[in-house]
Length: 281
Image 1: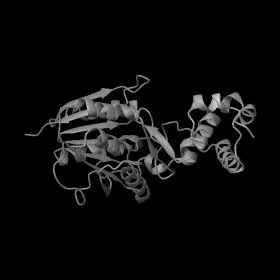
Image 2: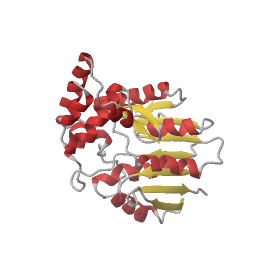
Image 3: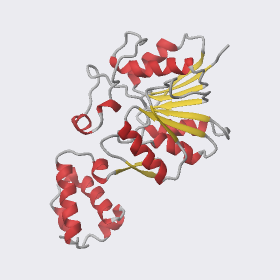
């Protein structure tokens, strides 16, 4: 079976998915694959292709099928224990790098690290920064550590929820996070995401004791702001939803320890990100 013969059996709707999987399988970029469409797959390659395509037809995400996902120009290991990195999260990383471009040394922690892409990318671009990362999932941390080892990045990992004072001590310059922020009763989530991606990375798993009476999506994000204040953190950069960033900005803007709180936009112009600077008397 040749590449051309395979692609002739694929519908227009699924064509790009087939290109992605064939490119990964045959280690060719899109252009190379199409230029060499007469390439004859070996029997072993055909078996792998059929295995891949059966999974994709059932709805499994491409990134879980191949076991990797792109982020900020690099490839990272992913599996069903971690959220698939989204292009929008690169905006969060870019904001950190631009905002602190003159900082040679910065103490940073990535809360809810998942596959570790945020923490590792920051370390790759700013090797002088002291970077930690945390998650409540042991399986997610295992994947993050694999990625850090693969990229030869020195990142310290913690199994913990938020800024747990019993496990993480010391002053922090910056907290960065893409925490669970979806509300099951309010937010629409694609069936494929619900079926395959970890719920613990999508929905806040429990209501913090001191959470205000907002909806489910606000609980963890608001608690993280409170923890930053308790730890006397200097800055917090966070990715949530436009709805939640609006609620958080309104709720926290009058706090006397918050010098500045700013919402900024994703690729579609939705103000999904928060940039906070704290000040202490």
